[in-house]
Length: 164
Image (cartoon, rainbow, N blue to C red; front, side, top):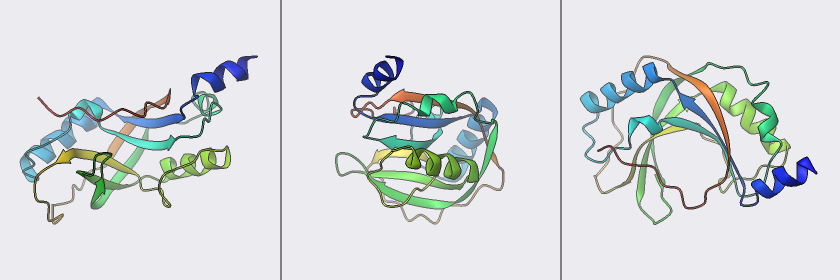
């Protein structure tokens, strides 16, 4: 009965993320403000790595919250522009985070699906930005810490909040 309740809770899919620590949020936000010159930025309280965004329910993801070993760390490897839900531009900071990649692979084996052919760990910096982006931004030379794992039912209407 419990697994049916979990499956029903995740009926629209499953979302798993690693949340950035407060210290790393402040450090990254300062870097973004001083070095990137973005006019449209997401609120730094939303900085995270999406581990899975699966339209297929994966209620077993909740079991990983008990075994995941955090904090985990990531290094920035570059920048990329992803399309948004409404054909806009989303600027992301690409990351090397072996632990997120490993967990994504495990959740995929558990049945998670993706809209994309390749998993690309990243932090969203600007969502639906109108700014012209040349992607020749400086790369921070500090690691980012992620200290919390979140597992939620997928909210297909979610969009990141902009910085006030």
